[in-house]
Image (tube, rainbow, N blue to C red):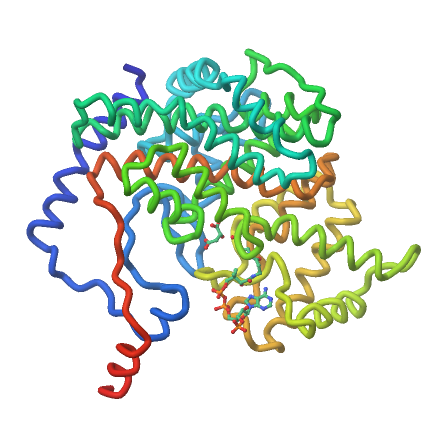
Amino acid sequence: MSQLKAVLQQKIEEQRPRTQRLLKEFGNVVIDQVTIEQAIRGARDVRCLVTDISYLDPFEGIRFRGKTIPETFEALPKAPGGEYPTVEAFWYFLLTGEVPTQEQVDEVIAEWKERRVVPEYVYDVIRALPKDTHPMTMLSAGVLAMQRESKFARYYNSGEFNKNRAWEYMYEDASDLVARIPMIAAFIYRYKFKDDVHIPPDRDLDMGANFAHMMGVPKPYDDVSRMYFILHSDHESGNVSAHTGHLVASALSDAYYAYSAALNGLAGPLHGLANQEVLRWIMEFQAKLGEGVEPTRENVTKALWDTLNAGQVIPGYGHGVLRKTDPRYTAQREFCLKHMPDDPLFKLVSMIYEVAPGVLMEHGKAKNPWPNVDAQSGVIQWHYGVREWDFYTVLFGVGRALGVMANITWDRALGYPIERPKSVTTAMLEEWAAAG
Ligand code: NMX
Ligand code: MLT
């Protein structure tokens, strides 16, 4: 058994009695109440999901396993010559809550090289789609096609399914999926945008560096990839992709079914697709300005108002939980300030950051006028030559796999049941409203 799996098993054994005790002794303790508004408006803020992988504070932002983003970057072992931790180190940390040693990280890096082989039929499925199919459809279809490989599904069908051991098979699928998804993503990129000419993987490289290599983008894109995948990995459990993954897996669907579904939610413009929408908005704005006209606070302000007056949202701004600038935005901004301070697109994004919160406050609708992760992420890709912005949500999807896979492994470990909230009718709400 790998060190990672052994430590995970130990953590699971420690955690199970805590969950059991809460259920047995404190199951009736009330932790929230639900208003009519919450029932109608997307269950916002209703506390009804449990995860220890990450927690989102509205003002502080995300903590992975109790650590803020800077603390996470600081604590985990880095790739040789890199500024950021390896994705493999982060995976160990997300799953177990422990900072791994270099030796433990090296074991995961070696293991992923064995796990990462994608069956050829998965690529055939993607190739069978028309080439102008959206890359997110390709990614979701590729992940779904791979369901045939599920060890969890095979275990379920073996006739020996045991709820207590189910996590082990989910862990196997989860580990295979996180190792393979960057391969599928790089394939989609090169299939769609680089004439179907591919670069074979390099056995000397960790996941982030190998992804950069297979994309065909030179350094520091290896570090950019590590940073991206870590930043996009998890955002507690209520966001659309994580929640979808959890919901689908709660039916004992395997990791491939669950993550394909999660990706379909991530592909929505109010969720992960917002990163491509930010680039589209900027390009449309520049095209409207016309050649040679410089962006200014005035013309950016006007363009933001034009968007709002047309009844559209400003992509990359606002959030369902956050009430301040997303620290994932700040982390990427710090990268830009260090590595590409003079990039014209970065300067424009910075100007939007100066102007948009004021415009949104004056507009008076958005509860959070501050930027989220998506407002900043496309600029870095653009700078390093990945300019096909309909690919950007695929990058989000590679990162989000880490969080969703860690969560559904733990879901099975803790024996969480099928998710089934209760719905009510409008007449019932009216009755309760009349009764006060
Ligand atoms: N631009 C314009 N209007 C906005 C924005 C925005 N960026 N954000 C919220 N609003 C509006 C929202 O549409 C709603 O209007 P209405 O009452 O007419 O339905 C009103 O403000 C109240 O919405 P909130 O309660 O502030 O936001 P909610 O929790 O419903 O939605 C988002 C959160 C993230 C979906 C929303 O802020 C949004 O649409 N932002 C733009 C898209 C985006 O950046 N999404 C990415 C989120 C991060 N991610 O990667 O998933
Ligand atoms: C995410 O990373 O999932 C987004 O910020 C959306 C959310 O948390 O609701």
